Length: 286
Image 1: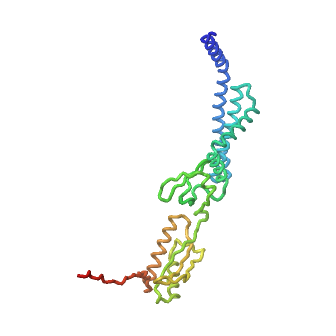
Image 2: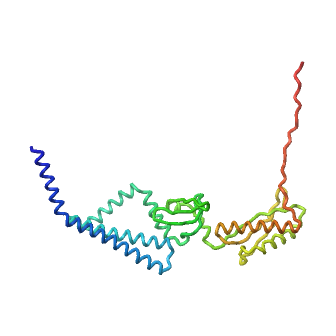
Image 3: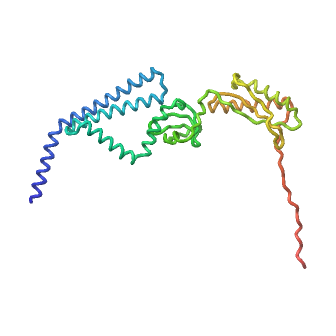
């Protein structure tokens, strides 16, 4: 058997088949280019329509992604049937079904994050720009994709969190409402007139502009401490973290100033010391 002749024959057959399929390959490349252009135009159209509909940014991103993926799937199927004439659309769809099952088992975590991303984008409560806390991460949502969410922490570090973690765990949305309630514990000495101290604290709160006046300020005689009677002070202010910290700073300074002006003492906590009895050491016998 002449192996060299057989190899030459096979190579010539492959070359002839490649030359014969060049027109189909060229048409397939043109179809891929057309698909890219159509996907680009379709995404622009959907972006304009979603902006006119005043949809939130995460939902606009989801619509654009689904549009782009849909156009590419249709375009690649058409290109595949042109390059491979014996391939029918039904066979392509069946192959995609079997391939999806196999890929799903192999890339379970990736598809889990993908589906979680779709559901997160469909949520109405969490949006880009919200301050959230999840799994010990506290920060501002900067970007939501189909696989991951970018959270800029308050200390400016960027945390990239898988969407599955956001979907499976409780998420606290700190800016869901524009105001939040804060509280502070203030202690006064035991010989203080509590009614007078309550009036002084409430008067100190009235002069703080950052406090929301539509919500009541609450002052309660709350508990007996080790060295003081403690008041619980509650107020409402802007929900953004920086504004909350600034408002709390104003509250602390204003209450301290008012109590000092009224001669009301904020006592130091008592410190209890435990003393052990000294036992003399016996001298050794001489």
